[in-house]
Length: 107
Image (cartoon, rainbow, N blue to C red; front, side, top):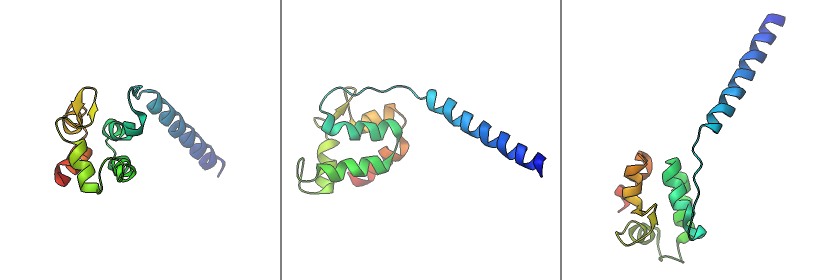
C-alpha cells in the first residue's frame, strides 16, 4: 500500500512538473492595437474556436447586427488584421486548422 501511494505521488509530481514545463515552452504573444478586437487574434494563436465564438458574440451590435455579418466583416480583405494579415491568412500562417475551418464554413 505504501509503495502504491509513493508511486501515485511520484507520478502526480511528474505530471505537474510536465505541465509547468509545457506552459513555459509556449511563445509569448503580445498584442498591439485596439484591444477590443484582440480576442480574434488570440483565438487564432491558440486555435480555439470557443474564444473565436465569444469574440464574435461580443462584437454583435458594435461591428455588425448578426454573427454572420461580423464574420463576413472580420474576414474581409480590408477587415480585421492580425500581424498584417486578414484573419483567414493569419490562420493559415499559424496553422490554426480549427479556427480556419470554422471561418471558412461560416463565410
